[in-house]
Amino acid sequence: MKTYVGKEAIANLIQFLQDNRARYVTLVSDENEYAALGQRVEEALREQEFEVKNIVLRGEEIGASERYIVQVLLPADLEERVYIAVGSGTLTDIVRFVSYRTRSFFISMPTAPSVDGFAASGSAMTIMDYKQTIQSRPPVAIFADLDTLCNAPRDLIASGFGDMFGKYTALADWELSNLLMDEPYDAEIAARSQAARDLCAQRAGVLEQDWEQDIKSVMEALIEEGLCMLLTNNSRPASGAEHQFSHFWEMRLLRENRPAIFHGTKVGLASILVAKYYEMIRELSKEQAIERLHKTQKFDPQQEIQKIHEGYGEGIAESIIRTQSRHLNMTDQDYEDLKARIIDRWEDIQVVANKVPAPSEIQKLLTQVGGATHPESVGLTQRDVRDAIQYAMYVRKAFTILNVCQMLGLKLVI
Ligand SMILES: [Zn+2]
View (cartoon, rainbow, N blue to C red):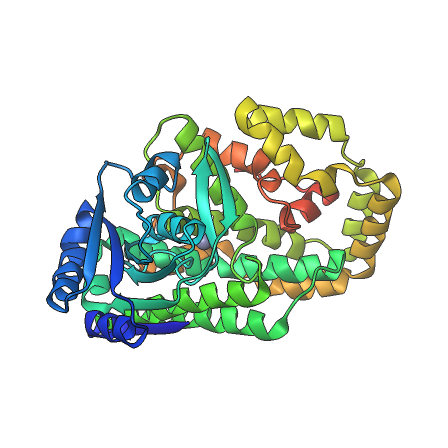
């Protein structure tokens, strides 16, 4: 995949299209993104005599949902076209999906360093109110225009940093799952994801001394995360329990017709909460862990199913239950084996837990980049937070710290 972050993004795009003898393109943006970059891209393409179909999505809150997928799909003709997504994460996910299903290539031109999905192959879509990742295809190239990124809304930039700070807990969760569930773990890719995250943390500490460099760094880090996910063929290097919280909130806001919150903003907030779970683990001695494991009963699958219905509502519950089949079908013996493993590997679990910073440190990083650190400040209520603590672990099948804490009977009190 060709990637470029700099001041000559449009020139690089044109060169790339010419090199690949592409003549028919479909440009997709929304009104803001068209004004910020799309129009300039369109003009430059027409000047070079490309045949351009221009789609500008309209609407207050554009989501990767049926409604907008159709808007991109309808104008598709039988010409072989390259799609160009000029936009942030949501718009890129719509184009990723449509281009894949129309057997076309697509190029991403991010307008904000807001999310780590640009280079990824999965489209985060919300269909019939259910948030899911649908396998699609990565872009053939990413051309990010640095001036556009630097002028992106500050909330979107803070969201990009928030998504990156989520890697503290995401990477720890991946290691935990490897330790306890034998899930494949790739130390080299984990190190790449970690390096990208650490660079963002460094920039956060000196933010605005060199704004262009800050923005270039966070954009490159976000692209790197996408590449890491491509290499592992799953989202483990970039997503753990903090993303489960984020997805839970996203679905709830949608279902209750409440205003959406940027992905990375939710992930940042959730990282503070998930870091608290790791803090609880750090504070537990092996003896205390053994005692808790012995005291805590295995969950009752029927009660779990009931809980999923309560937490997600009828429409979504069935899909969630399907993703939880491994958890729900755990036998008593599986459960006992896992308990034994937790005890056996308690020292290793501590090593992993020690890699997660204190919640206050994540809070500090988010403050440095102007990100939200209190759920209420972005419209999430106490009930939203309490319910995420109750129900978020069911969102995805991934094994995370939330599973471990359930077994230990450790509940987060807010
Ligand atoms: Zn994310």
